[in-house]
Image (cartoon, rainbow, N blue to C red; front, top):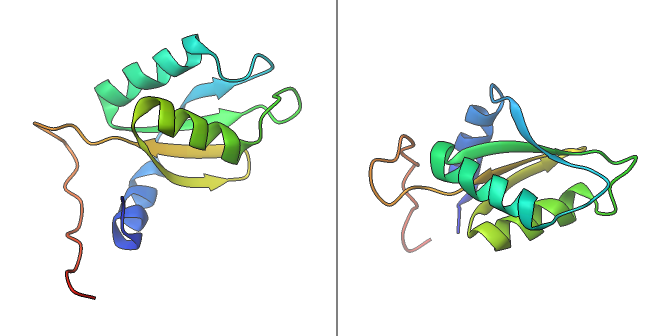
Length: 103
């Protein structure tokens, strides 16, 4: 579970990311889930977009469904875009701010 500071840090990094995942009229299928999983494995932090005119799911629903299917975390959902994060066990390129204990 990400803290608000960690989420804010990842949001700041996601601003410059290109949108690499598109959810269209076919919704979230196994192909899209595989694509998201592969992208998270390679990049850790990815940005996606829901084509709201044609998609059967909302951006929030798409982000949460992909996050649960790929064991990742939803960083943010703004408008039709969303950001997902899954940190690698080893050699992660992201160092998240530490969570405070006992607060």
